[in-house]
Image (cartoon, rainbow, N blue to C red; front, side, top):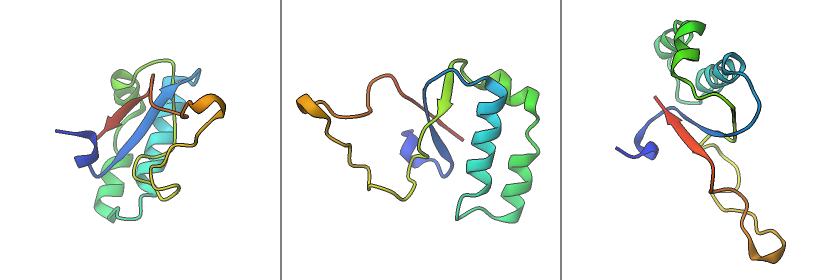
Length: 94
């Protein structure tokens, strides 16, 4: 199953954020999702910090939420023809 098939997903990019802070940021993104229902919001917030830190990767931070409104998935071109993003990023979906 592809990450794009999940309703709630965030992009994890390499960084120095701790697991607890990354987990709280992910819960914040999920609970402010435009399609979230009250029941889903309660279930998302019921996940304990301990459970979250056990399943998250260390040394990552939350990037732009996948599927969020923005540039429509287009990558910005940098000087020298290199595109921004791509390599070294992971998706975490629930």
